[in-house]
Structure formats: C-alpha cells, structure tokens
Length: 371
Image 1: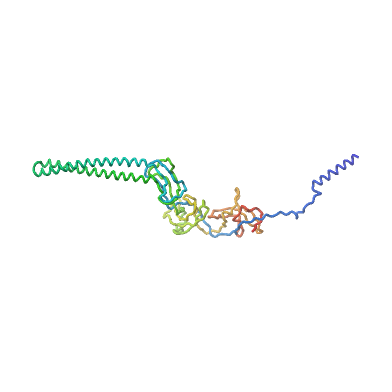
Image 2: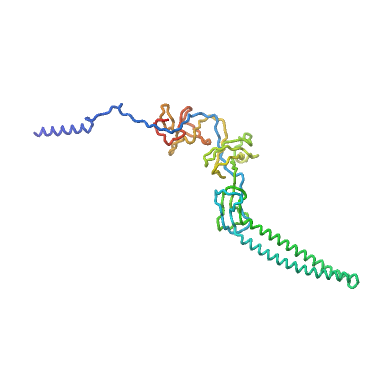
C-alpha cells in the first residue's frame, strides 16, 4: 500500500514539473515571432556632398557705427534716470535729470553782483559829471590866466580818471552779464537729452548718484552696425573695400551678408594681422559687443552638414544616417570647424549617404523612415 502512495506522489510531482516547464503549452516557432518595425514621419533628409569650398572662420565683434557717451557739464545730484539698458529712444528724449539748484544759486549771486556793478557805475558817472564841470570851468579860467597850467593839468587828470572809471564800470557790468549767460547755459546740461534716435547700450548712473563734469553716464548707439575683425596677413591684397563676406552672428543664430567698408593700412607687428570693418544689415536684437564670425571662402575638399543635423548626448557626437533599406542608424562622427550654419565632418560619413537634417528628436535606432 505504501508503494502505491509513493508512486502516486512521484507521478504528481513529475506532472507538475512538466507543466512548469511548459511541456503542455503551445509553442510558437521562430518564424511566428516578428518584431513590429516603428515608422517615423516628418523627418527631412539631405544627401551628403563633398564641397570644394570651405570657409575659414575669424572671430570679430559687432560695433555700432554711431556711438555717443552722454555726460554732464555740471556737477549735481541725479534726480531722475528715465531709461534702462536696451531701451530705444527718439532724438530729444529726456534721459537724465540733474539737480540744478547749484546753477540757480550761481545765477542769483551773479544777479546781485550785476546790481552792485550798476550802482558802482552810477557813482562813477556822478563823479564823471562833477569832474567834467570842473574841467570845463578850469578850461575857461586857464584862458583868462586865472589858474596856472599845473592846476589845470591836475583837474584834467581827474576828469580823465573819472571817464576811465565809468568805462571800467561799464566793462564790469558787461563781463558779469556774459558770466551770467555762461552759467545760465548750464541749465540746459541738467536735462540730458538724446542727441539722436538710438538705443541705450550702457547705463552707469542711478538716481541719487553725483554726476561730475565729463563723467559718462549713458552710452547711446544707433544702426547701422558693423563687425570689426582682425585677419592674418595672408589676406592682404585679397580683401578689398566693397567685397561681400558671410558673417555669422551666434547670438541671433543668423548668417548675414557683410560688406567691407574699411581696411587698416598697416599690420599689427605683434599679431601680424590687420583690422577690417564690415557693414551688416540691421536685425532685431542686434547689439554692439555681440560675438560674430567672419567667414572667408577657401578651396577645400570637405563634407559639410547642417549644424542642426548633429546629435549630441554627453561625449557622444553623431548623425542619423538613412541606410539603403530606409532604416535609421545613429552613427558616430568626428567634427571639424564650424562654417556658419554648417559644420565640417572629418570622419564617419561618405559622399552620397543620406542624413537627417530636421526632426532628429523623432529619430530612433532601427526605425523606418516614413513619408
């Protein structure tokens, strides 16, 4: 009886193990398991081409062609600053107001001095009238022989002195009036206005500061803008006024056409370079001090792809390549210099291959490229 129990128990255990192993389950053959391939759409691709022209890149800075530093001719406390950096204003706009009380006090003091000078003039005129009557009387007495020549000469000297004092008093009044006019003109320098329509690129003053004569308070600039760049001496004679060059402004992410308007006539003996200025068209958001690259064409044999085609993650740099069967492959590439909105590919791509240039965020490894 015990033997049958052990045989029954062993049979149950055997069936359980076979069931867990899937012996009694239906199995799919390898041909029946197929992975569904994902299809992605909305991607733009380009065929890789070898360019026979490359662009050498040289760093420059954006500068305004017209710049004015706004400063005061008088010293005083700043009462109001009506602009901030980046504000664009019209000519005549009030920018900074400076306390004019010191100028007003000086004008009042000069008014009092002018009144005193007028009183001095009246006194000198009275002395002249008296000296003139005495002179005329002594002139008659001299003719009659009633006074000596010496007595007459003394009276004449007093008369001449009185006339000189009157002229001096008049000159003093005139000098004080000119001084008052000069001081009063400083009232116009307590209200600092924009000399032209432009944008504030630098603000160095706040309400409560003391403005000193000649101290720059604001910097105002206006378009057109230029790019200043220093080029190596190998370009001497190759760059000419009127020539157009590509200029890439990184802050704007735009490539512009720059026209050469000025060339330095001498090389810097230390850097062996010369300065070039290019006019560039105005763009919204363009400001002086921005970083720019001047691109000069040179003969080359390089592969260039759009910068937006580059996929980066950590230290990995690659592009999405479309294989002949239409599937996507993320491939590592080694990059060279940036050429405007494109970048040089030193290795990892071959001419004729297709790469994704727009929508790389949708790409995935092994996915099928849709329409």
